[in-house]
Amino acid sequence: MHRAGPLVLLFILAVPSASAAVMTYIHHAPESSLDVRYEYHWEILRTALEVTTPKWGPYRMVVSEPMNERRQAFELKNHTGKLTVMYLSTTPDFEKNLIPIRIPVDKNLGGYSVFLIRKNEQQRFDSLRTLDDLHKLSYGVGLGWIDVDILKASGFRVVTGSSYEGLFEMLVQKRFDVFLRAATEVLDEYDNRKEALPALRIEDSIIFYYPLPMYFWFPKTAEGRRLAARAEEGMRMMIADGTYDRIFDRYQRHKIERLRLKSRRIFRVVNPNVGPETPLADKRLWFDPLTYK
Image (cartoon, rainbow, N blue to C red):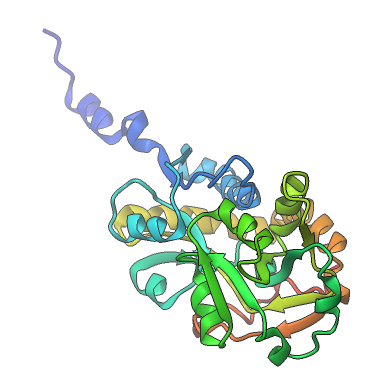
């Protein structure tokens, strides 16, 4: 039998198998057939991985089974391998137990929320002028969503629903006054449901704002740190060469313009989850409707 010499053996041991070399990013699936909320975010990640391929090698992006936000956090914190990356806002718990890339993926556009309301109720909202006025409303959000704690911390009345799709029905059925929706999400949500739910309407004049840095999060493991390091390197390359802004504009400009974010009344609310590690000083990372061109 022919035996490999020592140099050949050294070469064989130094080259990983194809499967071992592929860095795998497992992210959650859409919550319904109409859920297109995350297409932009996964394109940002995919592009970051593409531009780092010459240095880091091949990668895979894999869709997991459907998971709500609470389940996603559980899988990452417990290193189950069922999920290796998630996209959610910062919380003290996440900062302690997970690895973040502290670049707000949507430039905090998701922190600018508009109201999904019932048709024929716009006049009710035209008269709202203060935060005290907004406290008279009830707000629908998903069970386990980070927004629940933010709203409750500021004294707002919250009604939770266990199903993403069910929340649209709950609004129509007058279970609450407002379905609070991010500027990144509301147009697709409305356009995809307006025929089936003709009682829906996007409110015309209000922005409900709180800083909501939405990060990519990874398990606090050696592999999680490796996955995060590659993605962050790619995202910073994209910021430097303008690719990040171009993708943002392609997905978000028409939403910003159609919602007329620059001309709406802004009501500001504190997010108690935003800590000193938040990169607020780097203005490149944060959307502002008054300076966006």
